[in-house]
Image (tube, rainbow, N blue to C red; front, side, top):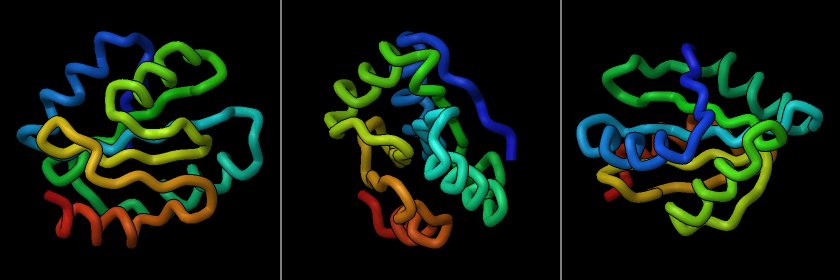
Length: 114
């Protein structure tokens, strides 16, 4: 799994555009939170997507708080951490947080979404 780091707000619109050809996952992560570390570990351990199916993006919410908040505003999702957003066709089609984050749910929502 190769995370693409989100470090600026310009990347948000690029992700929305990219999602029109390939769905994207945004993982909002707190480097100081044990629950967030567990969610990240579970994602990485169970990841079974190739880069043509789902592109994984990562934002460190402590280092890039403004970017994290802008992601929430742009995709109209309440901010949580840890949190995943699946972006497809420019929209957030699925959001989940905390220990409810699972690769199995991601897979189901990729097929069911939009």
